[in-house]
Length: 364
Ligand code: IPM
Ligand code: MG
Image (cartoon, rainbow, N blue to C red):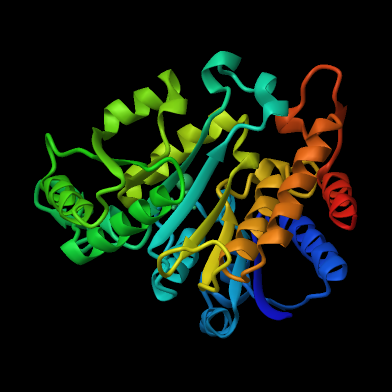
């Protein structure tokens, strides 16, 4: 089969990890006889430097014409001035909004081989396997008003946490659908003891639950969830939450898997289906790690696993996706580690070598 893929390497370690993701994708293409037409585009700091905007209109148009998008990372200290008119992150946010990618899936799985390379006790994280469904185009990130202004008594600024019932309903549905294909337990995370938007969230979640009598719905306050993630992470199956809560909790959850460098994500414009053909953007959850850039150090596994998610949800290629997942497992089992997941007696490798090893396994 033939697919068109937009590749947006972005900033910092972005280009390095994107290369390894593409290497593994090409290995899949050769082994299973698919061709992936790659269309490279600018986003983030590189786009600001070259064109003065974080998301050139050409990039957005190109993404729209493709079957899926691979985005590596954006941002860096060079563009961090709080006074700056344009920010690399704006590019990412405009892409998410412009492509209608409201559902962000972030699976958190502990690789048995990495159980000793995390900061948590092995018996706490053994068997962790859950998935976050983060709302991605609403809430504090996007709702208006959002501004800073001058008053006679000094400066003020505001961001708004606003949700419509339609926005809540469609994301909660994604949570229920995923739970249905798993252990049938959905945890909806909110702050309903304080926030009005969370009270609406909770009401809508209960209404949607009527359509999913086979799934157990539970509500959890976000602070309690932050605690439970560390105290008893195997408790969770599917977690659905609003944009900002999801941003924070998924960084926390990445520590269960040992490193941010291990966590992939998919941002979708509809309800995901394994083996389906839904449009999506795939990214590692980590940032651009500017201090590691250009050093051939970064862990490419999050990007490589994001490619596997792309095969699964956007290209309908389940067998191929499983091939990548198993290749990652095998390479880790053989003791190869990038710096972030390095452990005693393991073999340390750089970005490229990790990509080569996984691509070679994928090649069969
Ligand atoms: C993420 C990142 C982004 C976010 C940043 C880079 C804007 O932290 O994908 O989690 O906050 O959504
Ligand atoms: Mg984040």
